[in-house]
Length: 427
Image (cartoon, rainbow, N blue to C red; front, side, top):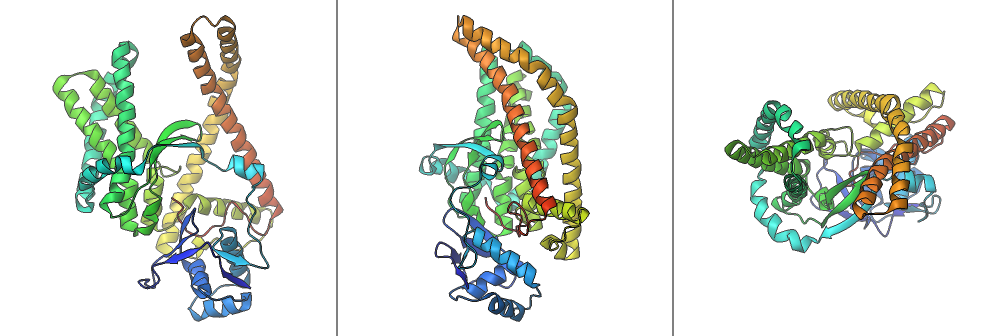
């Protein structure tokens, strides 16, 4: 028998329309369910049913599903603590080392600014995030900053090594202030859409230090509202970059132009839809396919299993309407090209260079520690050693992760715990 989990809260049933996502919260995570998963939870809202009874009710809603697909969906709902079942137990609190260590892209997360401290600022900035204004201002600012980079990138970047210590300090301060404004943009977009935002903090994304804003409440918004929150950071970076560009053109002070270029680089980097950055979430909400990375993994391992003769249920995305299926497959092809190119560059150029210079980095660190004449020299040696060590560790973890996933895919396990999730957001 299956029933709705006591920790799962289904909201807004009274105003739910046939095409809407079903909003479910389990306390720690929020989900938007569509298709078969949505139908199953609606069937079980208040009732305890067997597998056959669930299938009868799902078919009565006009959905045609095979027993295998329904069983797979029920197992995943139990894993996410949305459903509970006597036949299938949810995973324990302790995860295998390979899952806990290899599948987190935020390796460190520290709250710096509580939500109530930044609330006055985000309320003030929220007036900038009107949907109609952003629709025209964002592409216009992006075009202007592309033109600015085209005209001044080659002139300003070579100046960086020649900057004085004071100018370099101002450049670093301006860069991190702009990154903080980027996160304030996400939070302010939440306020503009009538929802709360969480704290702003510091994190390690894969191996890179970064700021973050807790905007998990945006799961309650419709797709258009979530898109504004997704683009809010890039919009704020463009505003900061444009302001710095104007000041540079008026004063000819290179630090302002360099800060503007750094803001533009932040925007261009975040536009990448193939990693979990703003462009990824924006595309995900535009397509209406949440957790694109999970769908990519499902497609990849389904293909691998087919190659090795392991038949599995067809990915849900391939059962969608033709326009969505075409757009997703186009994105998936781009994802494969990007991933393949990145892996080839890492394997052919980056790793060999890193391995070749790593002994020198280690010996410099050891020599500075033995001498220990000034903290600055030790700190510099440690900094460069970490720049070489962290990428090697991350690459090793990535290789182990892919190898384990490939082994599981070839073995043809009944349920792939890292893939096969239906479209749900977990902002």
